[in-house]
Image (cartoon, one colour):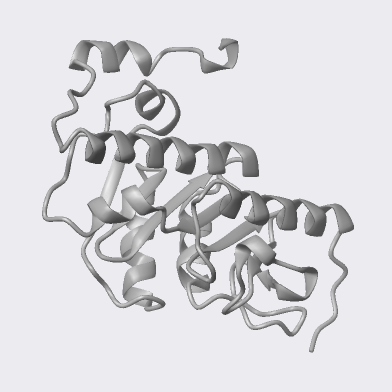
Length: 213
């Protein structure tokens, strides 16, 4: 085992936001996984089988982002290849959450692709939402398919599986997931009749400075 120092603040932040993901209803038991890149070469990811809502330091794997080499002897999540592939193609982001919130996952299991732009938070914070078909979890094929979609999206719906969101910073990334779940809930509760924002409004919202909200 290669022992490598992990900054304490990185561990503390990772645990806090893992717990927050469950508190917001984005994951259940061991259904999700999270990763965070804290420098050009290294990343943290939740360990295989861990529950994000009860995550402890002993359940965090420390990897080299490029090679996937484990530096602290912990077994990384089975989706680590997907996280690393996204990190590689998106140098602008540092945080990834694979989640399975109820409404969003329901829509991922349906034979429809709704217009998610029913609330302003979708065009303002999220933008394009992509889909991939059902591909075996943990496979290199899934990792490559999701990473390819992430080049232009920050959320990918994985058919019959769940969602992946990426972003810069824990708070912003998890906020995207929470807003996406809200939009999906509205779509389902309206029996798929919720009207999306008109195209003209969406174009204006893309230039809306949300930092002034």
